[in-house]
Length: 51
Image (cartoon, rainbow, N blue to C red; front, side, top):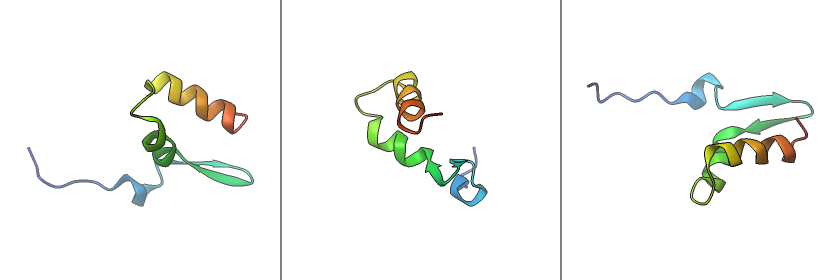
């Protein structure tokens, strides 16, 4: 019940290191979250970055 919030950006948890560039997972999620399921978002990221 704490009012403190953790900013996960500070830990790099929401950034996937994929050479040559990093993938900002939180940005990808925010762009697609209104019209897509989490599974669709995951597949979109996989296809977009050829993972």
